[in-house]
Image (cartoon, rainbow, N blue to C red; front, side, top):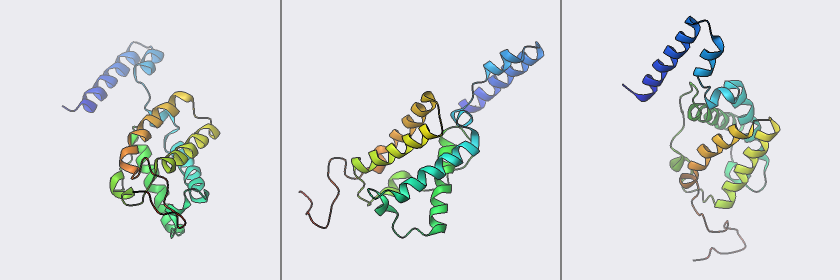
Length: 166
């Protein structure tokens, strides 16, 4: 039996016994909400993801990664990220994108680029009044993707004016 199935059965038994005993408060406490639920479910994830993506598209420090994105491609980017966040936080969504290292491979994303993106996410979470505990939990997940996303952790971004250091 998978761990998730086992935990679901235990949660059901806890809730059932709490309701049977007439103690709804005990039953509610027995089932801890997922991060997905605490983020507001799909509506919360969707709103945060839309605002976050719009900030990325508009930021002159990183918008070069989105050159050539038309409206349809931007909408697809948002949807893939909604599904990803939904999935990794315990929601019912299926991931519809490729692995992070494949999607970001060859883009030359630096540690500084990653930090800009993380900063936008932090700002959006604060704007949407997401509690600190949920922010920390979500960032632990996002930061685990860093090695798969950052191509050049210690290099400055290449520019037309300066050759890359070797």
